[in-house]
Image 1: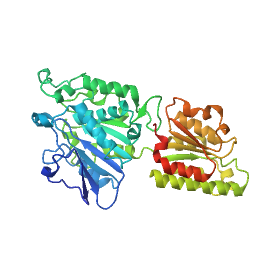
Image 2: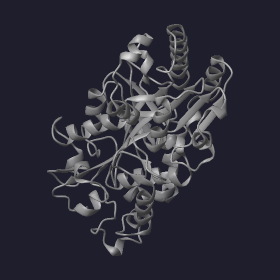
Image 3: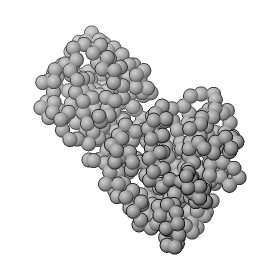
Length: 418
């Protein structure tokens, strides 16, 4: 992997990058923790006059100020004549998946954009994570854009060529490669609301761009499994739709999906702690101060940028008692949060128990900090042992410092399955 620090997007010398699977263009003016990776298709390339993407990577680099741009390259078509460099697409998916897991671990949010067979490679990477229970890595995939991707294979691949190359085998209509990936997505993924996780299903925002005059990929294969609002029919051929001349049309549509994928959770965490049940102003201020300190520890340790805690804006018990927080607003904020945290210092009847229940219903990985486990209602106390969509961890604590230490010691692993 090669990283280039640039003030403006520019292509490097191809000779210096040909053996690098991934080249990342980073902004020299700032550090970014979000990444968009472009993956070419059959016979494609990332640089040069015949590059797959045209202006696409440069436009994204220039328009999205806090996003790095990566271009992935792998051996296809005639390059496979160098048999010592040629690997099957499912093996390439393993290479790509391990690179995302390890070398790209500093990026908590990644969007994959694949053209044609590159889209199949992106889906194969996601399938690899699922079958290897790589939940921590899956949580970092912000979205996927499939551009002219033959998700069911291509009917235009001649049968006589299917035995010549692993590329053509992968593109075989209804072949083993595409069938396995399609089955995985049907069994484990949903795209109705990416902020909510269904039972045994992972939420990966996915969109597709279809070419109106695409000779190689038919409409069904390019958009299968996606609702109409997640597909865009663009004027152009199989290769033209990924080479935008202007920032309107296809590019603008894809750019908005990139932003949506990278920012699908408005809040990294939702902290619920009984506040209305507190009897005195002194107790309210003490609790509020301690929860805000826990919030700051979470930001420093887990690299969280935005955390919702009702006490942030309600600086006194009087303000909290007078606040009219609608149920719809509370549920919307909970949907917009990646993780849930319950801090339950004493056994009280509080709406935080209601919020904890909805967090589980929405599939939010949850952590409960309680003075005593017996203070929780029976079903909540047993949630850690249940086979739920989103797992729960429960920690007893004696002091606020205990909570801070647990977060410092474990970081984001608190919310991830072992």
